[in-house]
Image 1 (cartoon, rainbow, N blue to C red):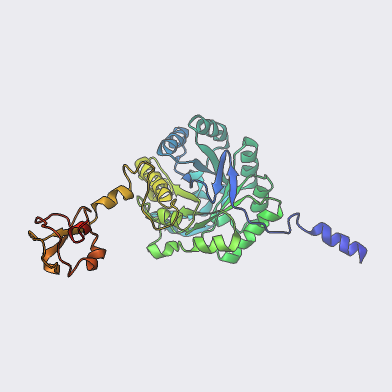
Image 2: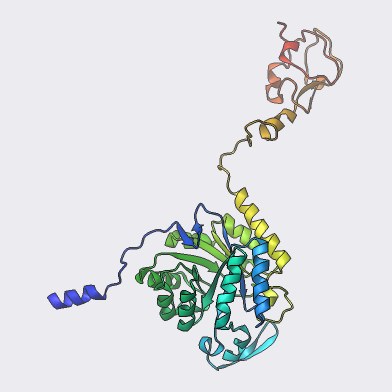
Length: 377
């Protein structure tokens, strides 16, 4: 059994253990639990085969406050066969499947200029490769991370090639069952790459019903894999609601399609945010994450100097006031009291301590009642 045992151990993957990963480093940014949401502006095919559009998209994404801008490195006859598809996409006949992708091709010689332009505008650049040549090209160019599209989630050959670069791998999970996601994660890990981010995704552009977004799956993925979980948002523009909800559910990465114009004519344009919408989208997400950043303890907001906080505001709460002129020796009854803002004496919750008691002195109408009005000092 000696040789068989040795051969068996040689066949095992390098990484047999599955370790939790709280955060992944993408460039100089930590992405994961406890870090700011990493927002990816997905240009995809929205460069319209024009380099100047691609460069301007980078500028606009950076100006909107996105952390990264993402493209797609694809070649039409390497991504799809020539099968005739008798269907439409956004009102256009698909026809030969390979030809459908021709307008989305990104010339490999654009890679350097796009990366340099992204550096110039202080935004990270990476791309989705759809074939092994694209993986090698992007790896050599020095991208900080790789993205694997939902349709490629089950392509172990591509997954292993991406994993072997050692770069962080972001995988979209549209159309997938949980066990398919698990297989993809394990495939990447077996290549010695633990730096994985899983994006919940619905591969309908856009879904017909809000329920189809199934955002609760974000919690399912987080519980199943103990990895950073994000959300690739295909909800209809200009809404940010789904992504804001995803952040509330724990998403640490948000990806959203982005275009210079929804009338640009690309396959993705109709379901993409405009530059102004992207700016608002980023602002909404940043605000949502900030709003989730409190202690979780239900208590007043307290500032050190109490100039503008809820401790200061408590002054405006109600207290007991005289409903009319009150005379000394009168017995206080409910009709003799009103509650008014601001605080000035006895709190309404202590009204029972003075009801039925004799007033020790006169109190003018609409003046606050104090314990000293009943208990002479």
